[in-house]
Amino acid sequence: MTAATRMWQTDRSRLIAVVGIGVSVLAVLANLGFFFGAGVGEVLRGAAYSAFVLGWMLLLTARSRTVSLTTLGIYFLLGVWAVTSLGYLLQDGFIRLVGGERTDEWVATWLASFTEEGLKALAVVGFYVLATRDGRRWPSISDGMMLGLVVGAGLKFHEDAHIGIVTGHGWSSETSLSTVLPTIEAYVGYVYTDHAVRGALEGLGVGAAAMLWHWRPARLIGLAGVFVMFWGHVMWNHFVDNPSEDVPAVYAALRAVLANGMVPAWLLLAGAIAAVVAELMILRWVGTRDRVFPALPAKRLFDLAKSANTKAGLLRLMAADRYLRLRRSVYYAAWRTRQAGGYPDVADADTAELMWLASRLGLRRSPSPPS
Image (cartoon, rainbow, N blue to C red; front, side):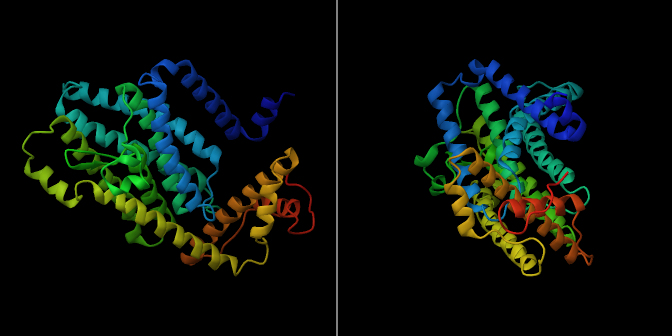
């Protein structure tokens, strides 16, 4: 029996993911000329900007996120191919339906903004729907932010290649926000938040709404994130196409409300910090009541990282990462259930895996490995 056959019989979703990753990566490799049309240096510069934002988000959420690096990679490829392609298909279909042309101003300003921002948000919503099917695991709020960031970065990667440029002014931009968000740029006095930053705020809103769903007003947070970024996108596309035109009243009002594009960026930064603080408070609240799954001391984690230069050490570090992320997701689910007036429960399979991982990490006596 081949490895692929065994995986198909035991974990089909994982096999589908592996095949999807392989096909997507091969498609990128087969189209290197397209993706590097702006020049290798320019493309690497743009990638460095997005990687920098991802890097500080990974550090910020190191003690609270549940999403894996593999999932983030999948969502980047999802942005490169699925979101981009579906966006173009929807736009072309609507243009034909109303008898318009792709060069019409409303297409770039309104239709593209609606489809692209909507699809990025839906990609994050899809993750939460699949990850919370039985309610016994729950992603963090910041998971949505990071998923939105990478799916937006994938869309940006494809769109930049299509246009033949790399967006983002880097750390030398005229706005101070470029210190932490080098992917943004300023034009005719308006600060442009790129697809990655817009996706991050949309995902943050989705994550917050999902975590606080039992509190009805919070359900509007997800829509608010998409709404703000949709108007930010509309404003940018309008000013790019009409830099010297007198600004109509509706655009002038939106420009004032968004503070020339600064509001979305500040909302993301403030929201990211608030989300992580809330997550750490939730984890601490549940952790003080947990008598089953022991915490992984920081010193033990540091020792595991130091020994990761060997295959066995790397596998132990990966087990620690899995243990921490699974334990957090169980904690978030327990907190949500308790806040909704229910009684937290942990799936038998999750209990078995957490127990086995804890024993492998030396946190408790060894049970049988999970089936």
